[in-house]
Image (cartoon, rainbow, N blue to C red):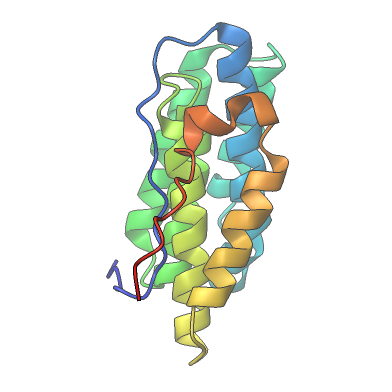
Length: 167
């Protein structure tokens, strides 16, 4: 998938040791990010349930309904779905879902779910001939609103005010 220079970026902090309950909150958030863009996958791959199943696995793991192993299996399966599609938006959605499920294994996957969800938005808007900057910024805002405030600095670096330049 091609990255464009027009995409806004978000600096992400490397997670430190987090509690299991925090990891579960991040898995739920990652699943929500992936689910938000899931319709973009369904348009191109309507018969492929792997990303939806990976999102369900992330949620099930966070609720203690499944162990890490089945969540990881769902992640691997949906990454295969990403490799099998020729559509950039669908590929990014599948990657987002895979990283959501992968959060059960390693907390750092949560931020990648959000990143791939934004890439899906970017690819979809570009495919439709529209500029992606505004759409990606709106997606990032949507993601931030859903992330519990206590976890904001775990995922996103604080925005530092830019010094005013002398005229």
